[in-house]
Image 1 (cartoon, helix red, strand yellow):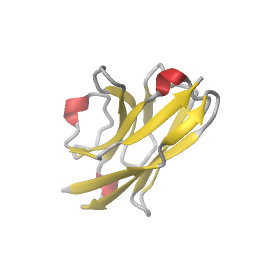
Image 2 (cartoon, one colour):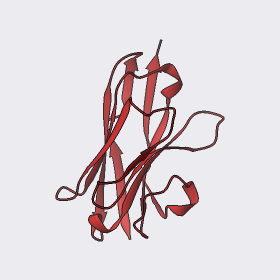
Image 3 (spheres, one colour):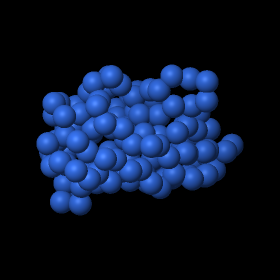
Image 4 (spheres, one colour):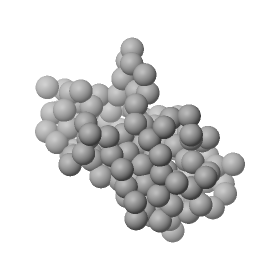
Length: 124
């Protein structure tokens, strides 16, 4: 069992940056692959990026590649999502998720644990 709490969301103008954090408590954080997902109003939840247990393997959705960066600090039980060059279409609730199997994945239903989400709003 792991509990995830996201923070760092807010409102920003297009071209700006935000860094989201996801703090984990419970079982050993380093045993989980972590993912970031987002959900805009009226749309399905979509994959943003994922990191392996060590942080050495990273995958991103094409829509954020080159603008977003995932990192993790296993000593602090925290995973981060650095978002640069934000666009209005990045507006969504952002969720972090943990996958007990360990391999990074972009598939929503392969993640057993989810945070409550944090709102990101990008204005033009």
